Length: 236
Image 1 (tube, one colour):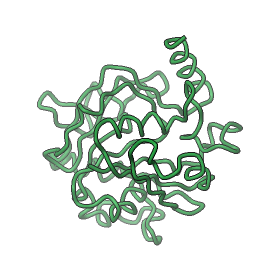
Image 2 (cartoon, helix red, strand yellow; image 1 turned 30 degrees about the vertical axis):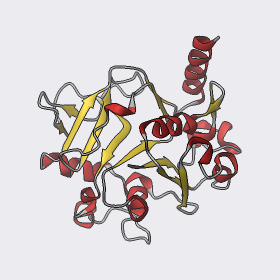
Image 3 (cartoon, rainbow, N blue to C red; image 1 turned 90 degrees about the vertical axis):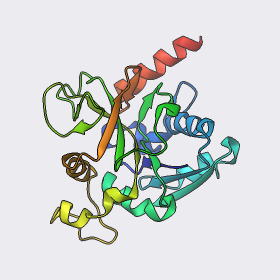
């Protein structure tokens, strides 16, 4: 199985920490945030990981090497000075991810999720990990139905964890779904993943599960400090 880690964000909310270090390379309890993902992927048996990059792209191969220390083959895919967003970034990486289902993870989240709970072959176009709504995102994103399907709208929403398993078929009709969104006609195209997921949800092609363990969107210096302090205290 292969994986994609989104690491192309500009990290603007994390300044000045990200002035010289991309957000996924910021230290969390003694190792870069992205390394927590790499270790879990390696333990799962993943062999190839694509890391999309933009801001301070040179730092990733310099800090992570070729992945051999984790038994992984790391491929760095530079998107240019302007990131392609989640949808464009995933579309741009499809040629390296192949036709089989693949894992995709936001490079700026931390979780104690056991990656072995992820399906290797989701029944539809995508399988999403959902978590309880954090204080900074109380409205949530999607609804998890009793049968395991994920709905775009409804009561009792949960938050998308930025971790999922996808099939390339999610992009079969992407130009029609995205329409005339800004950046969609660029080369390579730049667009968000959410519209594709919502379209697939309307067709019953998205499943998910509720992770009730720990999860943090490391989107501010304060949240970075909180998770770093918590994890260091556990190992002290």
